[in-house]
Image (cartoon, rainbow, N blue to C red; front, side):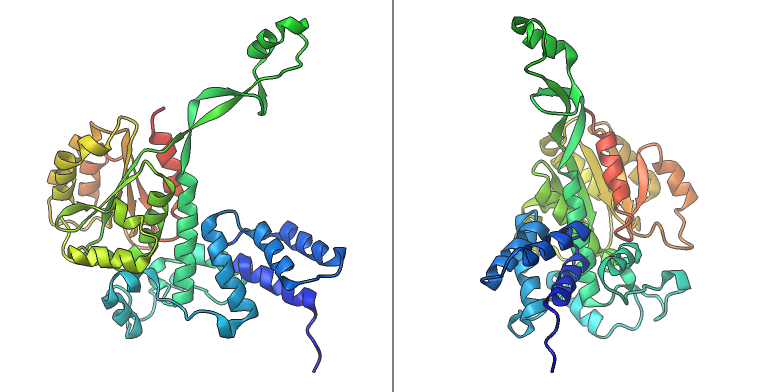
Length: 380
């Protein structure tokens, strides 16, 4: 039996890391192969640490790398696959996944060929497919976890926003001529010490109102990971969940352990169930929490499919009151982006004056729309 080429195995490992969402490209692959060719490998740990340094940029990726390394090189030692986020949050979702016939009340087959998720593939192709797939059609646990991790990574891009104001720094790309000349008057104006103008980065002020009613149960695994990523990445953010009533969940969403988070939600009966009272929840937020959490440059993000037991007129009144206290309101709707779905024209006419934009949130590719709108709304 021939021994497999170490370089082929190593390239396979790097492709597996890329398929899991780590930023491993051609440059990282070439650097790793160059490391092997530089000299004899005394111990496998040196290659392990070298690849980890190239592929991981955060503590979360560092921890994930150890698990991926075991799964690829020592599968017998790897831990058993965990359930996806929805199953951990609510065990009833796990039971639905085991005996699923149709998704969210639909037939067992997607209505159109364009809705079918092509999940066969590896590497960048598989990741690209996952980002475009409607989350309700991801019934494979590995694919669901991969999409959820991509959403959480995407959320970290909201950590800061760029201010219109500039800050002077000793390094940068735009030379501040006036300050440079003043700094070097003692040198006859010769620019020995140069100063640069760079954009000032400020923390993003976010308030998220997350619909966790029964109608959102199939969308919430993806949206939960996205919101959880935002809350953990943006220290100044606040999160609230609602169904028939509203309650704060910022600290719960920042829990490191999904199991611990589930226990805290269960303690107060805050799992994904019940009807939806959006207007009343917005009113409750405005009365009880707005003064503590909102500043003039805050952006309020409502995450909901829009199914509401309250009337559109009542919702429009509450959104108008809320709009007076923030920079703007963005609505993420997981139903948008689906073929055949349209917002109710009468309700849309009532809500449009109070909502900056209605954005799709049914897939990973749809979420960057929110990333572009939020910094644009936040006043500097």
